[in-house]
Image (tube, rainbow, N blue to C red; front, side):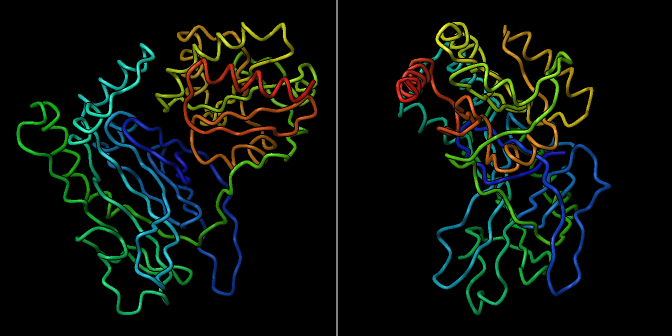
Length: 355
C-alpha cells in the first residue's frame, strides 16, 4: 500500500509512501480507513482519503506520475485547507534526462530545467477544506483548479476532486509520450470514482532533532537480527531511509556505500531502512535486488513496529537521512538527495561535535 504524506516534489521527485495506523476519535461516528484495497491504493490518513489507482496511472508511478501532498497556501483569506494531493506529470523524456544526470552526478542547468518543465504539469488533485470556512468563496480560488467536483463531506471537511485539464504544447512530446499522456488523462475519471473518504487520522509531524530512537528489534534484508544496540557500535550512525519505488533513493545508494567505506574506521556506520516492505516477501526480494545492483554492503533494515512508530510514521518523504549518536539521539535530519561532498562535510561536522 502506498501512504501519501506531506511530500515535496519537483522534476523526478519521489513520492513515497508509508503506512499509518488508522484510529481516530470524535463526536461523530468514526469511518474506518478502508482495508480491502489492493497494493495499487494510495492513502492520505491525515486527510482521510484513499483511492485505488487505475492501472494506467499506477504503472507510471515514479517515472511519469508523482503523487505529492502539500499545504495550499494560496487559498483566500479565512479559508482553511487541510491539505491537497496532487498527481504531478512529467514526460518520459524528462525522466530519462534526469536519470542520466543523476547517474553522472551532473547538476541540471537552469535553462534546461525551464525547458524540461514545459513537459510537466498537474494531472489532477484532491483537496480537503474545512467546510465552515468556505463561505461564498469560489472553489477554484481555493483548489487552484478550474474543474472541481465535490466528492463529499467527512468530519467537518469538504473534499474536492480537480481535473487538471493537462495539456502540453504541440510538438514538445514524442509520439510515445503523447500517447501515454492521453492514457493518463483518460484514467482521471476512474480515479475520481475510486476515491473513498474516512475519518482523518493525525498525520506525520516530521522527525525531530533531539528525539531518541530505541527499543527496535528487527532483521535486515538478509535475515540477520538487528536491534537498537547496533547504534552503540558507532559514534555516529547514518540511517538512510529509502523505498523500492523511489528512484532518487536508488541512484544515490553508491554515494552512501562510498561514505560507508570512507568513514567506517572513523566511528561512523551507515544503515539503510527500507520503508515499503512491511512483510511483503516480493517487496523484500525487490529491495535485495536493488541493494545488490547498487553495490551496497551496509545493512538495510526492515521496519518493525517500533521503527514504524518512532521513525517511519513521521517521515514526510524519501529519501530521508537521519544522523544519530551512539545513544540513538537524532542529531540532524535531511530530506532529499545530497552529493557525496555535501554528505561527507556534514558527517565531518557532526563527528567534530561529538568529540
